[in-house]
Image 1 (cartoon, rainbow, N blue to C red):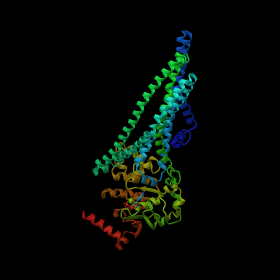
Image 2 (cartoon, helix red, strand yellow):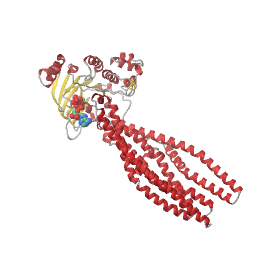
Image 3 (cartoon, rainbow, N blue to C red):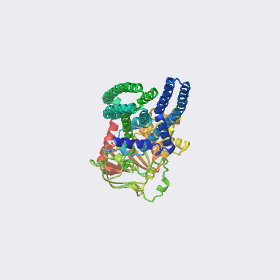
Length: 598
Ligand SMILES: Nc1ncnc2c1ncn2[C@@H]1O[C@H](COP(=O)(O)OP(=O)(O)OP(=O)(O)O)[C@@H](O)[C@H]1O
Ligand SMILES: [Mg+2]
């Protein structure tokens, strides 16, 4: 436990001077922490000393002494009342800045993870870590560490003062304090266990929320709202029950602490009163002891609870570190570059007439099932090559391998005659424009969404691309034109309109190789014709790889590969494949018949 507290705490603090933090931030935080943590002791000490001077002066009927005591209290309280808010402000600023730095690190890390990781993780898990866990971890370096340091400074400071005033009172405080500590520590473990369980259940609750937002459409269509709600309620109820348990533990502890506090006060008055009567203690010193004893007992009573709270917060920090520490194998090979400049000219000068070549490539996502099995094929430069076949055959996987998201276990992939492993991620990604079946639009304007294709594009270039993609007129018909917001809560666009925006983005990128993964499968024939027109503008002069279920889209392809169970089982153009009357011909005739039947 100690080790986890130490290492996670130090790592949390490290964000104040590295990975985005600065020495100034770290030093400001530590100075503010020490000053703020000392405030309770300083106020108590000044108060107690003032009270002693005042009481002793009153008892001795010394008006000058009384006046001196009052001045002393007013002066020191005045100083503290100015210093404390200033350092409180500095402390808060340091905390806000540190939280910002942690989020920045998390964002960068998630951005640099490879596709593999996202395909296996639930998006709600990331959301929960970025929102919940950062907020929980913030507790550690904001108030929890301060309370802990405060308890120590105030407790040890007070103990020294009481020891100086009277050994007997000190001994009494120590014995009661240790008993107090033992009782409080007994609650540490159960409280920590409950807090940990609450955290993990809370993450489940966030994931369920994420499901009802991302899966809103499916939930309604399949009317599974009730089942999803039940699952949510299971997690939600678990959080409620566990929270109740935590409240129960905290209440018992609080009740005990009140009683203990009262006992200590009572015992001290009895012992102190006896000593004063015996003239072994002055009344003023008894006042000091009464004032300081609270802090000593507070140290013993709360240190366990503060440590537990700190541990729960550090459990949140641990979940953040898990993301930050994700194995390097999940990372892209090189740093993400935000301004990829296509190397079109250099590549077109390459003498090879082959654009992409797969040489006996085998690939599997896991050890259990081989997805691509000894595949060999070529894609000539500037050709239009199609991949068709049964669902799950491995078509999209071929695209993922070409784009370098995964590495094949066997065989070699060459692009423009150069092995894929010889390209940097930046070089490789600049070679492709990709139009997925379901185009993701980022929060922001249509203009921004198109411009992601080429970050330094001019307004003219963006509009030109939209025109070629056949979406310009539609955009202009919107009240805010290119500034119309799209994405999560923005305007809802149809599947075809989204695809055309994706096509405009791809046109703007002007990459030498186009990868189109079922670009028209979800459209009706009229929209399909429209999107095909837009695609033709994109395809011109480029090497195009297209995956299609609707064979009408790829009839004019130069080469068609029929993929089944990770193997190429037929190859040829449309007419050649019809002639051999194989799987392709069968599929084509089926689609043809369906079209005319309906
Ligand atoms: N990230 C992944 N992890 C594990 N298995 C995966 C992953 N992605 C795909 N698969 C599996 O690999 C196989 C091939 O998938 P792929 O997406 O390449 O098929 P496809 O031919 O594109 O199918 P469709 O026509 O339905 O899009 C499938 O059995 C699929 O379950
Ligand atoms: Mg696919």
